[in-house]
Image (cartoon, rainbow, N blue to C red; front, top):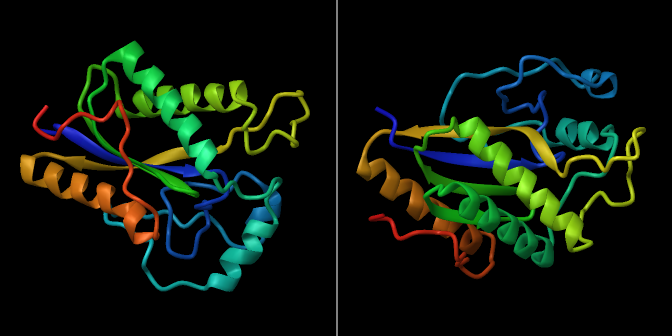
Length: 197
């Protein structure tokens, strides 16, 4: 039985549907991206981030995006964290680990009454609202045709389903070490609970 999720939320432009390493996407929505290949659907739950791939194809595909890929600054990460805190206070989600990195976010979340997709949607929505309120939306200069700012997030999140305490402990350790691996200090968020919660 699933008791928690290790979810990875991508910033816009971080992981494309036709990434040479694979993706969970069934199709490529934008014609400009399709010329770099069809969707690279995979079903694996393991991380593909370190797999060998054609970096030049990936770089060129990113140049074909409608907007520049999003890279969150430290101030934007703090704003995202405040948005997540609001979502947690509204819902009671139990988050055991969170790392907000420039191009993606890692979380470990205990199972709740809502689906993980709804939980992630709630977190993204509150984070985006907070970025807007703080004047820090990374795509603030790129309104869409409807005069609404584009989302700073990728469409979907990547979820690893955790079914035992050992798996949760490994995921929490991995998430906590992510900032350190990128040469950044460890992150401590007020909404993150101790692992035994």
